[in-house]
Image 1 (cartoon, rainbow, N blue to C red):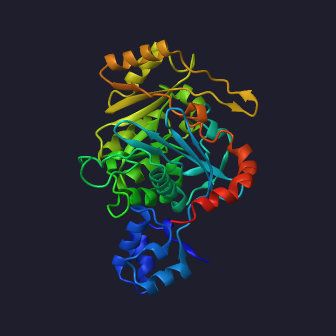
Image 2: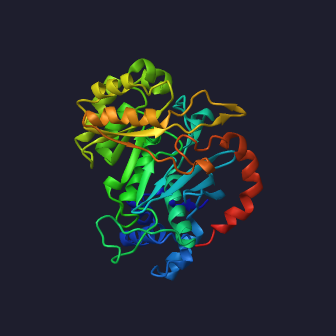
Image 3: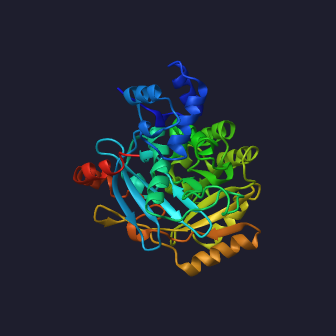
Amino acid sequence: MSTNLLNYDAPGLAAWFAARGEKPFRAKQVLKWMHQSQVADFAAMTDLAKDLRAKLQSEAEIALPPVVADNIATDGTRKWLLEVGPGNAVEAVFIPEDDRGTLCVSTQAGCAVDCAFCSTGKQGFSRNLTVAEIIGQLFLANRLLRESGGARYAPEGMDPAAGVLRPVTNVVMMGMGEPLLNFDNTVQALNLMLDDNAYGLSRRRVTVSTSGVVPMMDRLRDACPVALAVSLHAPNDALRDQLVPLNRKYPLRELMAACLRYLEKAPRDFITFEYIMLSGVNDTPAHARELIALTRDVPCKFNLIPFNPFSVGNVPIQFARSDPARIRAFAQILMDAGIVTTTRKTRGDDIAAACGQLAGEVADRTQRVVRMHRKPQASSIAAA
């Protein structure tokens, strides 16, 4: 059985080559071919010795998740549905901006956290993604965007006239799943994103979003501190227990303390709190004032997210999006207290790529759509 080299970060790949009597620099060469050039064919790795290429062809592979569907929204947002084993699919979303290209990456097939307002949680949890399935989303996005002539951006701090422009400059682990409940594979994928011989992203441009898995927040701080976003969504335990069931295990007092500990090593000097705006549920002036009191000791900024409606089967979800005027008033209360506050622009909702909508129908449609599209889509990405 061939070894999928996408499952290895730099130390793991070096160990794999060392076990076969190869010099460490061979691992670095292959790492660059895979992640900088998005080459999946060993025969095309021209700076490798011919006998090594033959050995790799017989012992290893660079296997990517097959693309089941590829949709582009009217605003340029692009969403890929990727097969990750029989009956399972995940989604990755690319959001182009004037000065950057952000890829939203999934880490699990489904999600066990089951937040009340999130379509992904309604499909249940299937399994953790492998390193190859996580980093494969970034591999595919860069390759497919380049092939289609998509926008490219200069690396951070570099003049666009210098260096190689790239489609994806920022990664947010805000897709399907709770990244910190797939900790080891998530960290290996993060290592590849940060590695100068792979994607070379700065820690400030890679964000992990968590619903508040406190022990794993501490582990991430020590293992691979990147920018951190916390899905807060409520200013008190009683309401958050209903919206984010994980709060019953790790209540707000513990979560705020973990945020402060994380900032000791974080690449940014603030935590981003994500807050979905649910009409009549968590969007009153009193809720805003509670948030100010809750976070007064935690350097932070708020990202307010208009709720994106969805249905479970044919039944619409019980929540509704807050009125724009109500969102503006809520934001103003936070800003008047000195808290940087933004309202997330709704992107990709015409292809169900907006926040909270990812894979809401996957549990139903994967079985059907994967069977319909597996052969033609899989063959289109097999060659380098």
